Image (cartoon, helix red, strand yellow):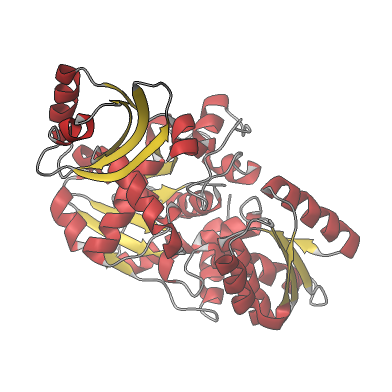
Length: 415
């Protein structure tokens, strides 16, 4: 990979025509908690609120340098890559056709259109991303345009490496550890390739969503594999198959250095960063911060850089994030309760609740028998240990109940 370091520095310099370097900020809150020097590389503060602009700009710049007449780019994306390409198209004054699933939230469509202006044409195609991608690639071939991959492209990887260049220059020395989120692997591949050459003493940890652990699967198999299913909650990193070019640069990493973050736990991190620090992170943007507790014994006294990769969060999702966070923390549970159909039964149940317990949901599902009715009940509390007291009282009273908090199938239909 000779010359990658110099090429990454050149790519970084070219980016200055588009936006200044993103801040590398010491976070006092996290530093105090872990007894370490925790710095956030704020990729959520680029013009499009994610690092994706770096790769899109770099790849387009390379194509246009080789063929100035080539003025049509195509991508398939429902999120940050679409916005990055749209912004770069407007900068270069070239045409962009962006394919998005029909199910894409209007907010993301509007933002992409705002970034691209008259330079981009947005086409809503397919209910699922695979259908959208197929339509984009077919159109690209017919139109003779250049397809811009979100991660599986050497020039995109080179552009993402600029994050590593800035970290080294801003810190003025090599950090002990860099924590990188992983989806398709473009960011991780670029940053590790650059820093491994420029500062070989730097250590790395990679974090991906538990429901989209494509790097974990690839490391185990020795090659990219396609996951059978993907949890789409961490939409910026929920990728079924890591990029082949990305993995070629990551192959050989220690499997113990690849961490998996549960989707609901990420919600706790998002809320903490919002409420304590005033930092808005999307689920993928919170990945690197979310795994700090797992690394606490490894990072004490060290300089650690967490790359917060994006901040494109739709606040309409905030109730869902809060719900997931409460459930993961054990502060909210759902039960199906068989309530005897007799006077005083409800009052008897209510006396079992503690002073910190609150009913968040109460719904009769149906009368399943003359003598009993099924009730869906959601309870919030201030301490997770309070549920042990409630369950003990339920058991002692003879009430029949079922805790469905962790039952994904029932939760999907009932909650």
